[in-house]
Structure formats: C-alpha cells, structure tokens
Image 1 (spheres, rainbow, N blue to C red):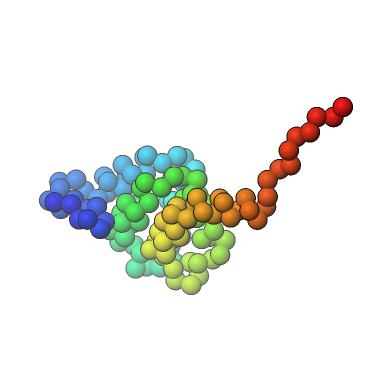
Image 2: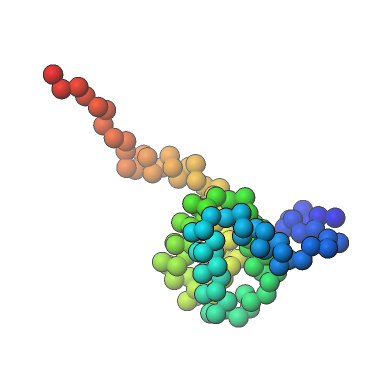
Length: 124
C-alpha cells in the first residue's frame, strides 16, 4: 500500500536508508554534495531535524525536480541564512518545490524585466 501524500510504501521490506542512498545516487555530483552539505548544517543547528524520516521525506518530495533548481534553491537558502531562524528541511523543501512550480512564469517575467537582445543587423 502506498501513501498518496508522501509516496511511502507500507509493508515494504526496503529500508529508508537504502531508499535515501538510491535517491541521492540519481543526482549529479554537485547537487548531491550540496544536499549533503546543507543537511549536515541543518542537523547541526536544529536537532529536531536529525530524524532519518525527515531527510527521507525531503528527498522524496524533491526527487522529480532537476539538479539546477535544487542547487539554486539551496544557494538561496544559505545566502538568506534561513538556518539562523530555525528553518529546516521542510522550509527548504517548500522553497525547492515552489521554485519548480513557478519556473515557467519566472522565465517569462525575467525576459520581460531584462528584455531580449537586439536583432542582428548586417553592415553594408
């Protein structure tokens, strides 16, 4: 039986640790390193985030999202110093998922804000 919200399979013999390693192995080296780095920082600062289930649910929710968006979201999380305010993996997960859901609209707005390059003209 599978939970419709988080995707956890009840009654499965597979351990969460194996599932975590499997999900991390699908990532690129840079994304994998950044995820591990931010996880270590969050666990050090916020002891309640130490549970393996919290880490597993974070990885499960961000499993379908590309490495580029994850790297941008983690960089934004670190730069804004959200760890100092007690915000953990759930907050980072929300940032990543929202960045993924809004990426198309943000691309249009960025092009509108910055404009496009001028057309190439041939010199006579």
